Amino acid sequence: MTEPTVRTFLYGSYMNLNILGNMRVRPSHVEVARLRGFDIRIAPHANLIVSERDLVYGILVSVTHHDLDRLYGRTEAVLGSAYHAEGVLVETLDGSWRPAMCYISHTMRPSTPSADYVASVVEAALQHGFPAWYVDRISRHTSDE
Image (cartoon, rainbow, N blue to C red; front, side, top):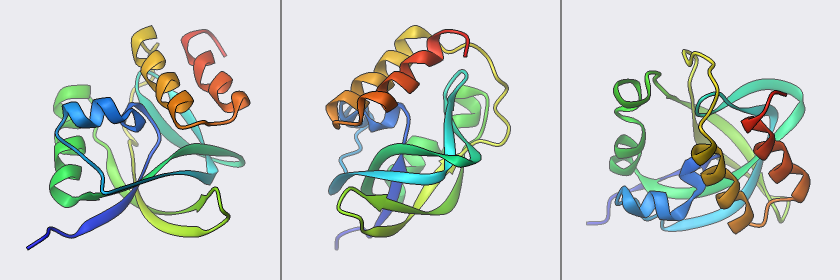
């Protein structure tokens, strides 16, 4: 029997399909999507903050609950801050709206991200064809904003 999948919006280093593969996560579906009402912060890891004027690009994937546990189950122990699932409504590039899960940390202590981490997010954004202005927005997290 096939394990059920969950639509999940990924916006940080997990957008990099090589990183997902290294973690033995292989989404059954991947498409670019936008999440309105949030902005991305990378300090030291990607996270979302509420913002009426901004939007975040990412990918909408279909993964199993086991996959989500593999990705987010140990974030507090490994990264120092827990990410929790929240329901969101994302817009795909064809203008369709889809409900999805999205993982956000409310306990992350801000610090400077590593250049390698930011580069992995930028690489994923380029792979998925995100707009140049958004790729630039992500890349600026390595310097003072």
